[in-house]
Length: 228
Image (tube, rainbow, N blue to C red; front, top):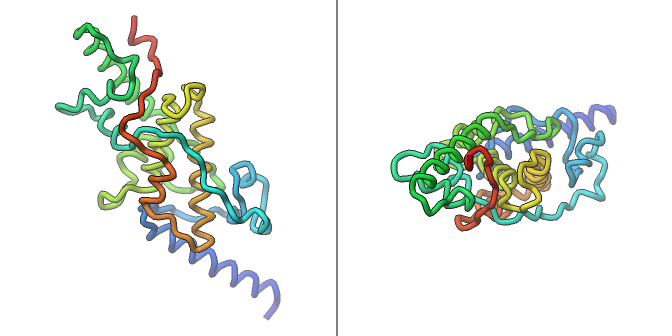
C-alpha cells in the first residue's frame, strides 16, 4: 500500500470520527459537513484562515477562550418573542430603555424590542466558512431553529455570546461592533472543534461555562430613535 493511500485512509478515519462527534455532541451541534480544509491544528481564528493547519502540532493545545459575562440565549429569545408577561425582559438588560414615566417606559420598551427583533433577523454571526458549514449562521435561526429536542445547540449558545457582545454586555467599547462579536463566537467554535479532534468532548455544561452566561448583566446600549 502506498504512503499516499495510507495517509488518505488515516485522514478519512479521523474525519469520520470528528463528524461523528459533532453530530452526537452534548451541545446538540449538527453540522452539515466538516471543513474541506483541515483546521484541527489551529488555535486561533486567524490561524484557521492561513492554509493547511493540520501540521501545526505545536499549536494543538488550545487555551480556553475568555468571555466576559453576558445574557443567556433564553433572555434573547424571551425579549424577541415578548409574549404576555415577558415584556419586562428588555428593560431587565437595557438600562437606557427605562424611564420613570410609564408612558415613556412602555414606548421605549417596545422600541428597543423592535430594534432587537430587527437585529436578530438581519445579523449573521459570520462563522468562518473554513470552520462552519451549517445552516444556522443567522442569529434568529440560531436562537430558534438550531436546537434539537429542546437540547441547546452550539449555535444557540454562540448566538447568545454574539448578541451579548454586539449590545455591549461584554464590553462598552464593543457596542455595535459586528466584527468583535463575530471574532468571539469564532474563537469558541474553533476551540470546540480542536477539543473534538483531541477526543475531549465539550459538553453543554462546559460550553455554557465558557460562554459565561448570566441573568444579571446589564448594558447601557442606546437606541437613539427610541428616545426621540
